[in-house]
Image (tube, rainbow, N blue to C red; front, side):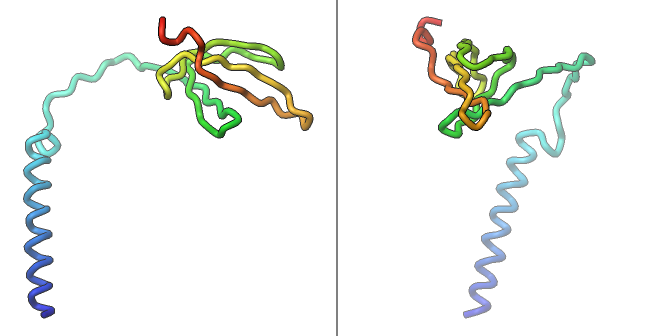
Length: 107
């Protein structure tokens, strides 16, 4: 019984090894194709905002907002325009309310 199970494991692992090796050689991981690297460094910084529902939003530009301010920004994570409002809580914490912009389907 143990011998059968051992043979089964060896055959199964060798099948996965052959499949993985063939995929690596076809996709170019073992013999990589030529890659051209740009000499210019792309420097994109993102600002992450967590809203009241604990969802994280990712913006390229984020203006300074104070309590009562409303701004519209493009969220890179959700790929849509969003309206951001800021409110101060009674504990002195700035909370963000993020909703989808009403004219998002036209942009």
